[in-house]
Image (cartoon, rainbow, N blue to C red; front, side):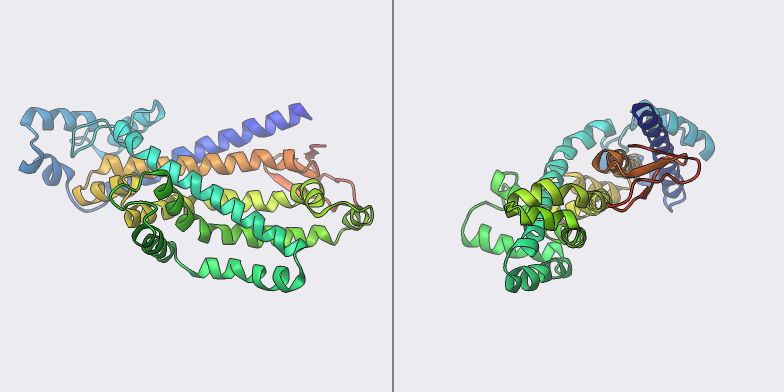
Length: 338
């Protein structure tokens, strides 16, 4: 089993690396064909203060006087070793600029993800164990309500009530714990809707199984039944959705940062777009692709661990899940991780 899982993990990791490189290639090509000349618009802009020696050094570094395929080769080589280049606007390493802004964005996205998971689990738990009037009515309608309200509307309401009304945080300094919390709530509420919908559907399916009826007949309490028997078999589709919403978290974080006045990747992107700082734009897009691919890779690697009924085929992906009352039957030319 361990050998089979190891081959599966190595194959998926290799595929993820290829996807990241293709994403970088696509980003480079798209940015290269955009209208505008970065040398004329940025390097030779008197406001940026570049000397002729600085311009010559940057042009030679990026190969801007070379054909695009030569630029692509040198750019891809630098990316593989972790060199993201030099900003055309500030003449500073792009990796330093991204790292300075990344901390705030990652803390916001991580806090929003935590808020979304806690909220989704609480709603899903209530739909199973609260009285039907609340569990079947009010709670089941909350995901639709959360999904229909944009995060910037939620953010403005939170700012109006908790910043201007109650004074829990100041809009001058939103990097405080309270400021980060309410920004995470604004970002996490719409995301929690998707998680809650999938988790509720999975719990509804599992709660109709015979083993749940047996556990209830033995007097198992609601909390123990939820944690011991319902969460794990319901986690597989939830993990899938969780991996897919990472892109939404990153995109929503940029909007939330603008609303709450936080300095992060959103501010860096806005500045790079305004000044046509192409290396910074390419670095941010490539970073988003890396984060998205890594999270989805972790989700794929977690499938067989969460549910041993998942069969892993030669394609390198989990391909089948047997019903609970049937043994796992691998498809042709597949190996079951059991």
